Image 1 (cartoon, rainbow, N blue to C red):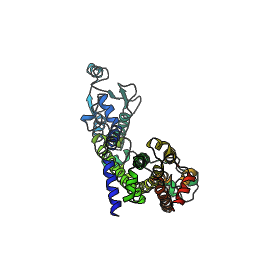
Image 2 (spheres, one colour; image 1 turned 90 degrees about the vertical axis):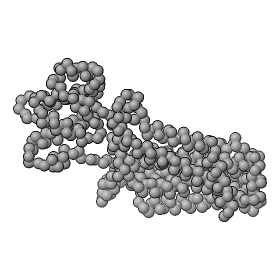
Image 3 (tube, rainbow, N blue to C red; image 1 turned 180 degrees about the horizontal axis):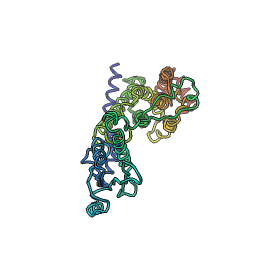
Length: 435
């Protein structure tokens, strides 16, 4: 056990200190940061005042009240309570006012709202919104509709309703939508169809699947490259006299697993830090992404499936690395494993909108694809607890089987030089070495 710890510690320190690992981690962290801040960066380059208003665009609009002072006051009060688009109202006497025209020409206001007397009888005014842009802002239109609806409700109800009741009437009804399959629609109890999946769960699933694929491939190739490099430099012949091949293999796998976990922790801190920025909090609100809707089971099971999936692919990469004598041949040798991981990734990504089809259900039990596909079903509440545990049990059984097979290949392959041996040659060598 002491030798195993030595191999784990040596492998971790050696890989974590390499320039390639450090620079890859830094570059990926920068790319994540840039991707999460693209809307804010765009607003800066466009010259918006987002940085001065906590990440929210400040809008100045002209307001032509005419004889509707009460309605205008209600609209202004309502806009003050909204955090999506802060509006500063500037009063003008009429749409033809010279000051208003000058303000529009000099980009001091982004448009104007005019309260116009309706044709025929009517106590509530017609509203005209003129925007400087080619297309009026959807956020401004939404704010005007909500604010004027509240003013209209108050004007009609008078003192019959309290301010709280008016606020409840004018509050928009939140609707969570999801796709329902034919099986669910005719299932009888309808409980599955009533489940709601927040948008944030889709985002988390995308991130976790991409993270699993990139991390598993990077760390898997590290394992194979480490073994092949030691074998090609003949260092393996020295190491094998002091440490058993089995201890070497699992020591390297565990050591590089710690390297992968370190990278994931760094990425998690980068994502968390960016989410805490004020302008990103506003963007999450605009896209209706609420942490309260997050299915935390997907994070717990996601970590569990990542660990087990890593070890399954890790033992395969170690076995393949042990039978390759030159690093130049490694890319071709690991291609089948890379293709397996790509299949798992693509099944998950391209079926996120149709997570109840037969392909997804079958793939969620296959050990090579279950780390991503079952994660998809968990995140969208499409998997029962017994299905998850069956998938985990099959994944553990696959790790034990392929770990046993990989250890036999490893013990034989590390001492075989020359061209890459065939399966038949490996079987002969195992029998000769009584492995």
